[in-house]
Structure formats: C-alpha cells, structure tokens
Length: 139
Image 1 (tube, helix red, strand yellow):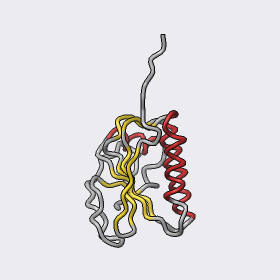
Image 2 (cartoon, one colour):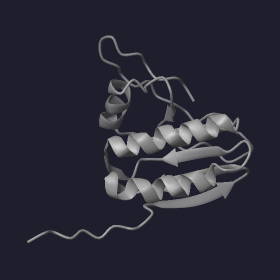
Image 3 (tube, helix red, strand yellow):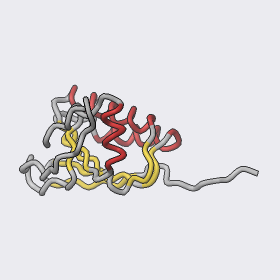
C-alpha cells in the first residue's frame, strides 16, 4: 500500500511592496514541488530588474532539486540585472548551501527587508562556518 501525501501545487505565497516581491515558501521543497515552484519563480523573475526575496523560514525540507530551483532563479535574476535574497534561520540549510559551494553566491539574511524601494539591507547575524568554509556575504 502506498502512502499518498497531499501538498499544494505551488507551495508559496507572493506579495509585492515598493518594487520588492517577497515569496514565502512552505513545507517541503523537493522533486515533487520543484517544477511548479520553478514555474512560479520564472514568472516572477521574467521582467527587467526583478527584486525577489525568498522567505524560506517556513520550509521544513529542502533537497537538491530545491537547490537547483534556487540556482536557476539566481541566474535568471542576475541576467536581468536584478537582486535575489534568501531569508532563513535554518542552520542545516546554510550548511547545505556551503557544502554545495553556494555559501558565497546567495545573499542570505535572517529577517525580511523593511518596505521601501530597495530599502536598507536586512540585518544579518554572522553564520558560523566550519573549517575551510567561507562565511556568507552580507545582504
């Protein structure tokens, strides 16, 4: 007998304020949710100079397909001279980013940025890194 799980097709909510789009992701980001998530993020990063903030705090699981979606979104945003920021307090997720060699790629903070046009960068607490691992860039 197989176990059937019910998950939303797009595990996210979106709000825009002063040109910044905050996307809150929920639940598990894995092979099942990665394709619809990529489609949603593609749409949000399709215009010129996208400013995306991905709030990952409600995410309970993140696998390599989720990392692939983050990299795809980062590439799309950069190609359009935009900005992508991640918000997380999850040390395990940060360790995965560093282990994948992505610790210096993404802007990572612990709080959502304040409203306003490209307002001041959110406060960032230093994230401890292991031996030989670089620390993440400030937002």
